[in-house]
Image 1: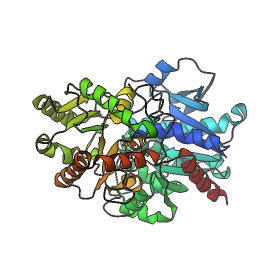
Image 2: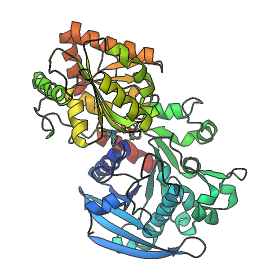
Image 3: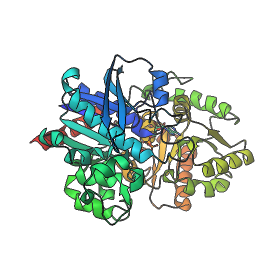
Image 4: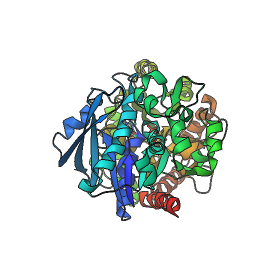
Length: 479
Ligand code: ADP
Ligand code: GLC
């Protein structure tokens, strides 16, 4: 199967969250299954800095709207054994930021990603022979490439080509809603009945849901949630009208990247059989955070984008109560300035117990996950979530809310197959009770705690299995 994986992030080159992890792992796993999966990515400035010269360049012009000629150059690279086509679209991605310079998105993101989608279609139409690759599947991801399935419907070449489209929904809360006047390229192309005629706005993800051949949520539980009024991100009617197309496939965990036995970032590597060595990473992290290193003090960490999604509204109100316990808390991340500000203030107030690192790097993610006894993912919603899987792999018990993919991947302490702590209600009290439950087990039942760590480390979410399920979905479209 020839698959174009159209995406806005790619681990190793450009990342703001888990979408990047998937964009690297899934095409590779598809390739391991014998498929030809290639990635289409914008040629952002940060990508150009890392990859200045390509294996091949393909250039063409097209007229988008008002007869303006746009120059497109597609730089072809081999990144980790995957062919990646980086789209330099008339300089539109040649900016300091990816989606925005600060926390605020660029106003023309709708136009940028429309032109990116259109450029993808033009490139694979006109260069198929030259690159010896004819797409059978366009696998789109999130709102950024959601317009592509709709563009296919109005293009006679692609309509006749029998190509199929899949939309993976990694995060339905980001929908790409733009005023029509901000979208000259789409407005000129689309017949008006493709949009809601009564609205001045276009919702990209809604177009993707309506016009793709299949919709894949990134976990089975999230797929179910998308079909409920509460979990559909206000798109209940749209999802329900397309419910036959909706499935859920759980993301995998990249166990090469997340291997406690040979992770170069760790001060001490360990396996299930040498789990006692894990504590060296904790002592290191405690020191790094300015705490007094102590094996007996449980360490809870959290690394995430600082957004409402991640449940900070449940955590911040209970910090004062948590600080009464024998505990260390280490939080790292970037994002909403409101949360950054609050976390900075709290960290100043409780220097010996609470540390906040305003930043993100692979080293932070790996050392915070390896060094902790517990890892917090108390999300309001969580389509899949990857960090709880990374924590499980490192024997760090995730404390999660029972939502989205967290429900599919973590079992509560009181279950026979316990791998972490799970709470249900979306409020601070429920989170506090869950953390206390975890702390109690750590202090009072150390042997059971280790048993749970071992079970966590033995739970596996293989990308190859997820890729196999994607492949079955692709094949169904041609059955
Ligand atoms: P989401 O995609 O919603 O952020 P996931 O758990 O699926 O959540 O994936 C998060 C991924 O992004 C992990 O690899 C994590 O280490 C990384 N990450 C966490 N915070 C940041 C950040 N501020 N910037 C970039 N990547 C981050
Ligand atoms: C999104 C979701 C996250 C998911 C990731 C990768 O950003 O918020 O839950 O794991 O995409 O699919």
